[in-house]
Image 1: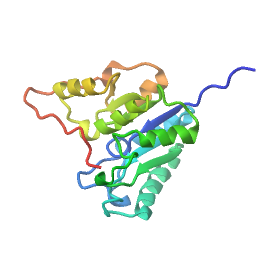
Image 2 (image 1 turned 45 degrees about the horizontal axis):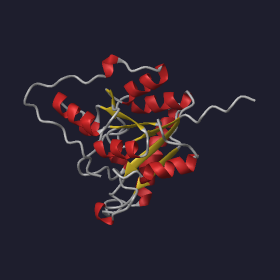
Image 3 (image 1 turned 60 degrees about the vertical axis):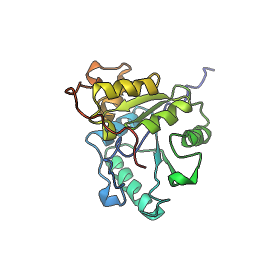
Length: 213
């Protein structure tokens, strides 16, 4: 009997990777808007046999900005839009705590990733994880994942110097223009040069890498 193929799983950040982020937090389903091409990318991954899982800090819960019913409504909106494209997110793992709570699940700590590994019974070594924020990538690397940066969210305006700094902090980083470009890379099996970031004019401010969640 041949050995069963290992589970194909990819772990995505949410705000700034799948949907538009906000400095004042995404607080309602009406404020949840998908980024161009992101849901189609998830649908393509799902149809190719990948299990798509989301790991997201949602400290708006701990800060009292919204409740669980509202968070569920955001994810219902996402899942309904994905279903229309023939896609799905298998599960959303979230940290509900405020920064001062000192929990193990708030990224950049790897607790959410550890939970995902246990739930699916998989070793996370080499599992691709995708985000536009430093803390998600750090959490993924701490859990053994392969880090993929998308140039959306807080990294949308990242200049060459900022990218170099990020590469120094995240070993093995692979850079893509957006989630659609990442899906292309994963499904085709090689990194397309068009995914490399464009240099910005000298003196342009480096984007904030730490998300506010």
